Each structure stands twice: as structure tokens, then as C-alpha cells.
Amino acid sequence: MIFVTGGAGYIGSHTCVELLNAGHQVTVFDNFSNSQPEALHRVERITGKRVNLIKGDIRDLPTLQQALKTCGAQAVIHFAGLKAVGESVEQPLNYYDNNVMGTLKLLQAMQTCGVKNIVFSSSATVYGDPQRLPLTEDHPLSTTNPYGQTKLVIEHMLRDLYHSDVSWRIGILRYFNPVGAHASGLIGEDPQGTPNNLLPFIAQVAVGRREFLNVWGNDYDTPDGTGVRDYIHVVDLAHGHLAALRRLQIQPQCIAVNLGTGIGYSVLDMVRAFEKASGKPVAYKFSPRRAGDIASCFADASLAHQLLGWQSERDLATMCQDAWRWQSNYPMGYAKV
Ligand code: NAD
Ligand code: WQD
Image (cartoon, rainbow, N blue to C red; front, side, top):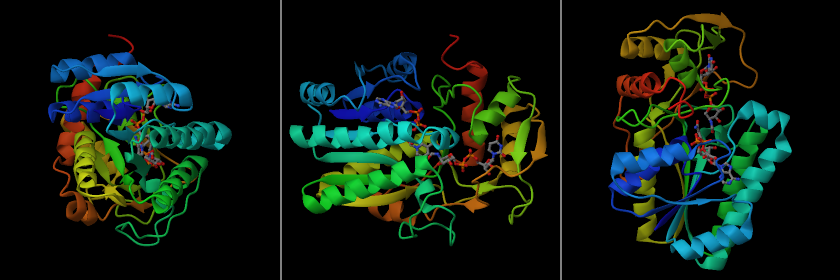
């Protein structure tokens, strides 16, 4: 039984599909602060299999312990957390409470229940402003915002835990920029309010929910002056979690691995690819740089290949086609079905 915190969210729901398809049983533990139960109904529809759902908050230790015990969890995939960079600057305590305190409680509950196997959602944000590209896992760690700090603190917490007890099996996965949706078009990213991230914003322009995209800066030291990122299909990312679970089965260990494609695309590359995939125009305007943004960020994805036997398979066209299928099927996301 795999215990998935935050399993109703964007990456969690896609990972649940792949876990169920691979024959795992899945318990989702989610407080629905940024998701809807409907996502899990769709997961069941796609897979024809049942998801065991427990509504709860990872900061609630007794409920967590009870949940881990009763479902017979063998491993945890830990997605639950808040993830909006701007919001984390305005509400740092909320982010430390939810992300750091929540993970602390989760690890305490796991220790009590003897479940010492965890895959954690970290982020390329822990590399800060890259000193060299592509980013390898031994690049110095630093952050520029409270959200990133919470990821870094949790990574340290996990490494300290492993050093205190080497029977733990810990996989830290540093995601680059997850995009796209399941090929069925039934599940996808459903941001509340104005999307912070590029692809959901572009998709909402294409579907007519927004007038134009603000391109934050066209004077970066990149081929076309706009920011370059390593976009990875969410289904490839989901497979990376299964690969990490398999790796952790071999022996106790604590590993940190990039999940990216190794390819960088600019904002304008993304606009053009989405226009092609959707057949819709994506109007945009150049605006000043967004505070805290970096010029370029892309992974060296070779360690994931070496350690996990994993590499991304879906190209940019597929990412945009799948995102568009979801967006055009459900222009208002899960809310208006
Ligand atoms: P999401 O917001 O869609 O999913 C997070 C889920 O966790 C939601 O279902 C939410 O309801 C739940 N949750 C939040 N706080 C909780 C709590 N205290 N108790 C129980 N459930 C709680 O986000 P996502 O994009 O799927 O991201 C999943 C994880 O991956 C997060 O930890 C995020 O920081 C990390 N990550 C995301 C990205 C990205 O760009 N999406 C990049 C790098 C890392
Ligand atoms: C990508 C590019 C923007 C929106 C953030 C977090 C990071 C991680 C992923 C969780 C940049 C440009 C964007 C828009 C734009 N999340 N852009 N107009 O900044 O790489 O990373 O999400 O861990 O921690 O910081 O992703 O999608 O916000 O931006 O021009 O309306 O698109 O400037 O160059 P980012 P993003």
C-alpha cells in the first residue's frame, strides 16, 4: 500500500494513476486545501481501480498515525504542501507551518508506525540562481524565497534523519517545471485564481479565459531574451516516482535526484508550441522582469537515468497537446463539471 499525501493535487493525481496502473494499492491523504475530490473520482475512472481516501491534514499527528496504521502503508509519497512562491513571501509562517511542520509530523508518524520509506517532492528551486548549467545534484543549494526555504529545510531534515538511522529509504526528487496532463484529458492542472505558472496561463489565454500573456522580461541573456526552463511532462514525472520507489526497494539509502528533461525552452518557444498544439492564437505582451526570476534553469538528468533507470519520454508537442486536451475539455477545471 502506497500512502500518498497531497494525492488529489496536480502531480499527486497523475502519480496515483500510474501507481494504480502498475498494480499498487493507493491511499490518498489530503486536506483538499488546493484540490478537489473530483480529481480522485477521475483517477478511478481512468484506471478502473479504487483509491482509498482519507481526508486529513498532515499537521494532525494522531489522524496521520491512525491513517498510516489502518491502511497498512509500506511507503509514502509526500506531495502535500503549499507551492506558490509569491504567497510564501507574503505568508512565510503559513508556509513553514504547512510544509516544514507538516513534514516533521509526517516523519514522526512514520517513525512511530515503522514506515521508513519516503519519496519527497523537492524542487529545482533549491539550486537558487544557477552558478552553472545544466544543474547537477551537487550544485550548491540556496534559495531566494520562503517556499524554496521550506524545501531546503525539509531536504536537510531528511538527510539528518537518514544519518541518525540508516535503515530509512529516502528519495528526494527535485522537479523542474511540471506541465501537461494525462492523455485522457480527464485530469490536469487546475490552479485557483490567476495562474502563477506559465503553461496554465498560456492555456487559459488559448481557451479564452484571459486576454493575453504577460511575458515577464525579454532582456535576459538567453537566445530570445525570455526566460528558459526545463519543462517536464507530468506523466513522465509520475513515472519518476515509481522508479524511485523501485530504487529504494534495493536497499536503505538517501538519494537526491533531478527530474527534468535536460532541455531548456524559452517563454516564446512555449507560446509557439502551444499555438501549434491548440490551433489557437496566444496573444502576449512584453512586461518587466518578475521579481526573483532567473534567466535560465535546466537539469542534468543523467543521475536519474543512472540511479533510477528513468528518463523523460514525452516531448514539448505532447506536453502542449495533452495540456490543451484537458484545458479545452474542462475550461473551468474541476469546479464546473
Ligand atoms: P498541488 O497544490 O496541486 O497539490 C498539493 C496537494 O497537497 C493538494 O491536493 C493540497 O490540497 C494538499 N495539501 C496541501 N497542504 C496539505 C496539508 N497540510 N495536509 C494535507 N494535504 C495538503 O501541487 P502540485 O503541483 O501537485 O505539487 C505537489 C508537490 O510538488 C508540492 O509539494 C510542490 O511543492 C512540489 N513541486 C511542485 C512543482 C510544480 O511546479 N507544480 C515543482 C516542484 C515541486
Ligand atoms: C516559467 C517562465 C517566467 C508566467 C516556479 C517556482 C518553482 C517551481 C516551478 C515549485 C519564467 C515566465 C511565467 C507568466 C511569464 N515550483 N512567465 N509569464 O518561475 O521557473 O518556477 O514554478 O517548486 O519553485 O518558482 O516557473 O511557470 O512561474 O515561469 O513570462 O505569466 O515563464 O518569467 O521565465 P518558474 P513559472
